[in-house]
Image (tube, rainbow, N blue to C red; front, side, top):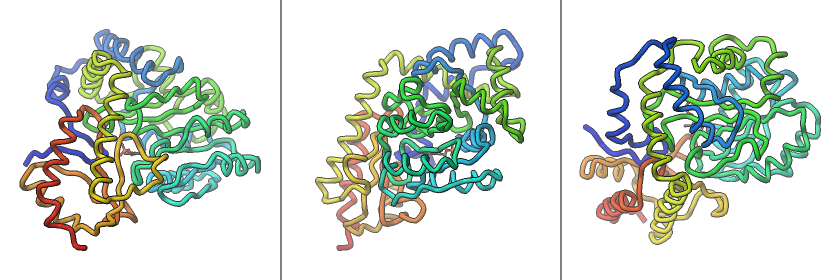
Length: 360
Ligand SMILES: *Cc1c(COP(=O)(O)O)cnc(C)c1O
């Protein structure tokens, strides 16, 4: 049964995007392929606000998240942990055999720039990981404040995950001085999963040249060698590159500023809806994500039952909480192609059945 996704990834894919994916593929060493990459790359860089290369990786985001660790960490990596994805990144660093430190914040709290400065001052680290928008808790870190701190540590390579915020708001990589910026395609870009992106600064490339054990598949030097030829090291997910090209057409046709404003408006509609029912936001309001709302289930609704009926009756789904806050929170995504109208349609449907599931 087909149903509409309001979960925070993967998100609903448009008919136009699906159609683009059916374009016949070509050889990845052909002129047609390099032409496709050349059509994509300038606009992709524009969305990253960067002049650095953007590597196209056929993997989910975790591929390049792990790859970044393997490429730039020599002395040690500080993982800022404030939710399920960032906690996992610390685990991944250790699995890569790196010296890893954990800077812990309660779930729902952003990365605190002062605590970050204090920890980096120990001089134990030459890399740091930060998740801009912690999707598990709907919490957004003030990346500008964090980047001011990072500028005081020129030997530290910054790795920033923008997986669930990229293209929904401006994240100006070069201006912020982010060395490695990572995103995926199945969140705000609303493309089916399988393709991820990684933009790498000169400083991070220089570091990678000196790091042993980078492996092959996610080696920045391999990526760069082929990037220079508008190619990828191995056969990429060509169908998703057609989808991306189509999505970039959509984005620039709408206008990036309009796109950001639409995400903000969608988000506000859902937040107001939640408040009007008495739901509290899980993070502090100021740090609430722009691409999803994570509410506390403070009205004690029977989430599995409500989600089941929403799916059966209205063919729509949102998310009933992630990791250790499953059941005690729920998350509604407003990413991708959603509009105020489609968000209201979801909320109206929830309103029809919500009274049946309040256990107070
Ligand atoms: C979804 C998500 C990931 C993981 O992405 P995959 O594509 O599943 O590997 C990582 N970080 C954040 C913030 C996410 O939202």
